Image (cartoon, rainbow, N blue to C red; front, side, top):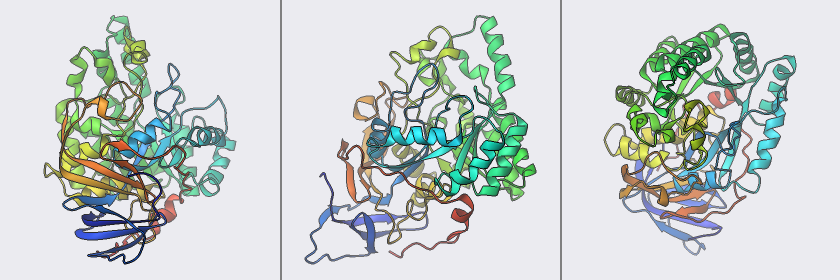
Length: 478
């Protein structure tokens, strides 16, 4: 099934959003949800029909943490906005919000936005937006934030506490204060750069440069300390809203829990790699595949994160998809893990892994799955109710999951441009069989059916208005 469909009827599915799951039909007209009801008769309407009997029909996934076409200094990621969004679509994701890479020294906030719009134009197969990236703070940058939010539709920004364009505490405080003022959400990569630098230097001096030493150079305390510090800075900056990206450990989660217990606006994201993989991967002969930051943690940390998903203290699951080829690009770190480009692919496997490990293993129900993968990302990042919603008038971004379909993940069945998957040979129960982007079927039974350039840039709403709008929304009854 390919091409644009004026009307589409999905029949007999178990239709679920973040609140409820019931058997219903969904009618899609001109790329929008037109009706949801227990039974829909189309009469003489020219309509394509999909039978979703015994399958879940859900809002399409929203991945708010990808890195497509990013220049990491030592290498450029191997997935651009075509191959990256193609893989996303085949995995049940219908919108991505990409973290833009650093631009030239001293550049404006607008510089990378224009660069990335060109990267995605005519390539993206699903809808997309970007997070602003702050690589230094001065009066010009602070002034530009308001226009980025209200004119450009970029209501979220990323700060790094490590890497080449890390911000010191003064700059972080200034950024948090101003972003709160202009209605933006601050996202943070939290690691203690000074401690990491010392540990890396010690390991190198001792000749310990194999990939297995990567996690030793970035212990979980480095991440947790930075989480605690930025939470306190956000508190000092007038309760600035804060979003912790790619959480990998329980200690950092405890700090976030304490802040939330005191009603501080803090949200937490984790990723599939921290839920299903652990630091035993660094003992493998192909350990370079698993060099990413934060690194994989001891197995005990996985259960702490699953508990956070179950009790609501983790809000979203994204991927941090940042892919490099193992055969060539990752080999830059063969003699020194510090030279290995950080990151791994995962945009296609996020939804099936979380469905299989979460829903099918009884850790949480289908409504919580939707909340983690679609509804909360949409609410937090100014996309709701256009995205992440089954309301009439919302974009017809949908994914159909077959809970009985068993799939063993191997790289040949995936659609990214990497040469491996870190999740090789993991068995999934439940798989996305159809993905629909604004009424178009872009993936069907493992076959990509979309088209480069069909994805649109989404002008997102400011954070404050996004949170206030329909805080206690009631979905369309179905």
